[in-house]
Length: 406
Ligand code: ADP
Ligand code: ASP
Ligand code: MG
Image (cartoon, rainbow, N blue to C red; front, side):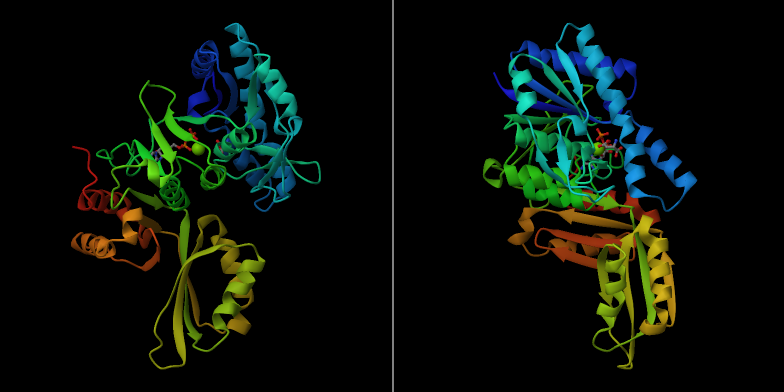
């Protein structure tokens, strides 16, 4: 007997038949004698609709009310799944985040889980009741509903698995595992049997939406055994685990892309101490995250161009903040470009092997793709290129690193 957390994403609970399918999968685990907690997302498309409604009323709105609205999608699916389980003769009840409670900090829209009180739930699970838990939502210090950021149900599931000391956390989704790159874009992408926490963390943080970044951080910290698998087909998935558990290590394990970034160039900023602080300070004060940064060499020793990226959804706010500070920063012109994509190559092999970055630059050059910005970490290289090259860049790199499925 094991204690397991099963998480089903939006597509997996996208309609009534699919919810019934999920109920059958849960029943199989219960029939095998396991204690089960299930975490579900809202039906696919629902959260987008809820976000859109908030924006239609006010583009800049009260984040607490936004959370009140967008958390509702998951309340529907927990109730429906509990009913579907009961129909199959399985003892089950639904739990909203606040009923458990899953406590979070007060960062509405992007809250972090602080504690989960599982006492009541564990008692009921021991008595054979399945807990059906709303993903994505929690309760803030002000006793108001919070949400964990888009894709946050993954984090709810891993956090619950850690709190329940579960043997496994199975993330069921619409692909049957973690691939070398997004299988929807590159048809030759290969499924990985195992991937290290570290690589998965990098992949997620540079755009592979299959797991939310925070869920991987949490899995790594609490050593939760996470498995990604399909809710539609019976096939072995991908295990996220420690490096020691992986016998055959690849130099490059994955390639990811993110269309969520936008590029800003400040033309002719003074080349003197304090300028970068002057630019990035006001952005930080406005809670705008800056990712890639490049400062050009100054030709005349007096002024230079500074290019950096921010989240696409922050672009207009960033422009406003910088224009407001223009008097102080004294740049000549601000050029904003949302038509960019960040493509990243990830692999623990980079620590010990030279030439991996060079292969990336060469491959992109041979496809005549111009690199606008470069950034690196110990196990990752990212480049910013024009958005229209997304698929071409991914396919070319996938082949160049020998990742194509046979
Ligand atoms: P869910 O609704 O189940 O949470 P998501 O849409 O959030 O599902 O995540 C699954 C999607 O992630 C897949 O449909 C796939 O297009 C995308 N994806 C991006 N990169 C990868 C990758 N490396 N491996 C698998 N899927 C990926
Ligand atoms: N429903 C939320 C979203 O669409 C959370 C999730 O699906 O993980 O972002
Ligand atoms: Mg998701």
